[in-house]
Amino acid sequence: MEKELYLSFIPPSKANKVKINLRAYSKSGKRYIVPKDVSIKINKAIWELQNQYDASPFSNPVEVNILFVLPNKRRRDLDNIMKTLGDCLVYAGVITDDNLIYKQVLEKVVVKGKEGVIIKIKEYVEEEKFKKDLQKLQNYKEKINGI
Image 1 (cartoon, rainbow, N blue to C red):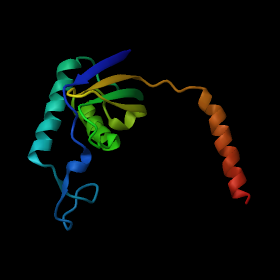
Image 2 (cartoon, rainbow, N blue to C red; image 1 turned 180 degrees about the vertical axis):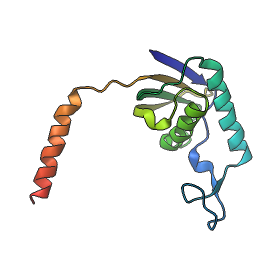
Image 3 (cartoon, rainbow, N blue to C red; image 1 turned 45 degrees about the horizontal axis):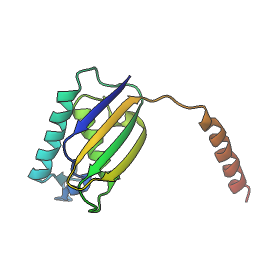
Image 4 (cartoon, rainbow, N blue to C red; image 1 turned 180 degrees about the horizontal axis):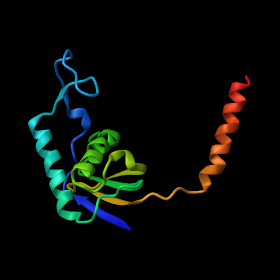
């Protein structure tokens, strides 16, 4: 089953956090504060996803294909935006944990004056083609270790 979801805007990057008080620690050992405008956009993204997704959350490995429609050529780091988007998928109840994303394809296209995100998500099916690649990796490791 493949689900297609949309966001009407580009979510903010995880890099939009401000580091605070290094003496106080969170679980990760770092403390951050999220600016109010970033927090509002994250909550809006969660709300939009919740309004489109009415099934049980994916609890098995998934594959996501994400198309970012950007209004201009301003530099954006898709990796950092994807971190925010993964969290939004969890909080919206689309997936149970973002570590279930086994394959992700991120693509951006610039369409002047247009903005949004198209998300296609489905269960991940491991392909047999990787067995050949894994053998090549193993051969390489043996070669390097023998040097």
